[in-house]
Amino acid sequence: MNLLTIAQIAAPVLQTIFIVVIGFGYYFSIRATQEMVHEMRTEHTAGGGRPLITVSEDYANLPNMNIIVQNVGQGPAKDITFDFSHPVQSSDGQVLSDLPFFEEGLTSLAPGAKIACYWDTLDNLLPAIKKGEIASDITVTVRYKDLNLKPLEHEWDINPRLYEGIRNVDYNGMTDLVDTLERKIDDGAIRGARER
Image (cartoon, rainbow, N blue to C red; front, side):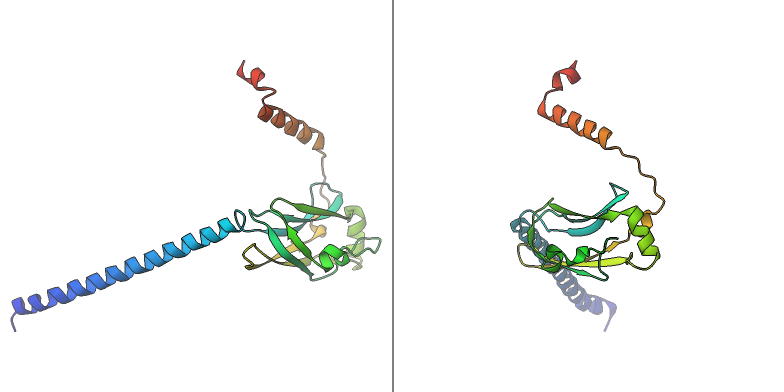
């Protein structure tokens, strides 16, 4: 067999292999695109997106500590349950993790909705944490479903001990002023003043 005969036999075989490889590439890219479109449709029918339920301590109002449950996602959440690694307890003995919305869970939480529950002051919590009367490093496991009943689960850590020694300045007056000005600008009340 000479070189020309081998080349004549190899060329169609290599072309066939090349066509098969290209075909598999197109097939898998089409499948990936279809799955992406299906997921986007699912998120769209779920009310605009997926929910994301967070549980955290509110450090914005130190020395007051709050526990915040919030849906920061784009879609509503259903059948929300909470599991705490340790009880969330205040210095006066009240166990927040035993409250009905933590114990029994929530039926739903809309996007942007939040629940704030007063915990204690940092000045009262820290001595009790140092004595070992109250747990500080608490993990909260949140389980919930989106509108398509897809189960979701996240873990969040609550640790008030980290805020020891923080000096907090109250900027609420300035923040309220900025928020009011932004609303006025959005409403058009200050538009004439800005255009001059």
